[in-house]
Amino acid sequence: MTMPTPLCPWRMQVHHIHQETPDVWTLSLICHDYYPYRAGQYALVSIGHQKETLRAYTLSSTPGVSEYITLTVRRIENGSGSNWLTQQVKRGDYLWLSDAQGAFTCDTLASNKLLLLAAGCGITPVMSMRRWLAAHRPDVDVQVIYSVRSPQDVIFADEWQNYPVTLVAESQASAGFMAGRLTQAMLSAVPDLTERTLFCCGPAPYMEWVENTAREMGVLQVFKEPFFTPASPAAGEGVMLTKLSAAKTFFAAHGDSLLQALESNQVAVNAACREGVCGCCKTQVLAGEYSVSSTLTLTEQEIAEGYVLACSCQPLSDLVVA
Ligand code: FES
Picture (tube, rainbow, N blue to C red):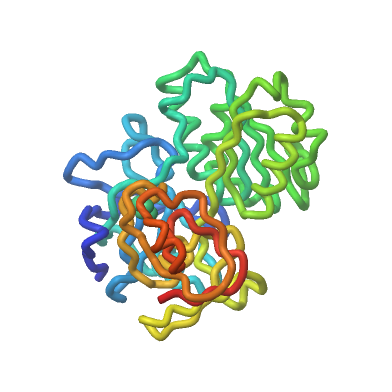
């Protein structure tokens, strides 16, 4: 039985589970209270019987449009959270979720031309936003390019028939798919590319390529959302983090913030805004290289002592944290 935690106070019941692809399932949840969230946001989920194990998953549903609150989860080999959610949780079970979090949303955007790019499971916030746009901003010109490994890996395959989408399959491309990976030529073919606001979600190298290429091509506004994938040494790459106070060493994927790296490895961190504003996630880095995008609540002395806002800290090498 899953556990409530201070970070996950929202109890939701699994209404039904739908298999999207060979390794992706959507869990449809009922919340008996009003659960506020915005299209494109994510929530932390308390995992299994292991107290204080949290994983972050996109809320793939759309507020005010979807009948249920949904989590769409890819099963990752050796991933305890995704295996539990996709293989053990069943209809009628209860899950505990955090408040909705994240700023990867389009509901306050003035732009009326958007380009939504996604790879693999990165489609989950994109579909949430696509439905929201259709319901609330039908005037917006939305282009979507969705990259998958093969045609059988298209998530929300039926629903995509309602919206214009360019599908790109790395292998076994059949009718309706472009073959290969996203290319500059595919981006060039998007009408009015440079006038569009670009949203992109997928693995870190994919997003890095998209951002660099799109900016070179003249796109001015690019918003990115990384996957929340629990990393492991088996992933073959990543940075190693040693948390002295927890006597713990673990791995995190390149591109993860320090906060994501800690949370995806079962290290609880106080985090509220997740945007470098509230100061909740202050953490001291004792060794290693990193970059920061916000030091808003930190004093100069704290910065000199290695304190960072974990949500706004990008590890650049192996790190030791207090
Ligand atoms: S969570 Fe608010 S500053 Fe990091």
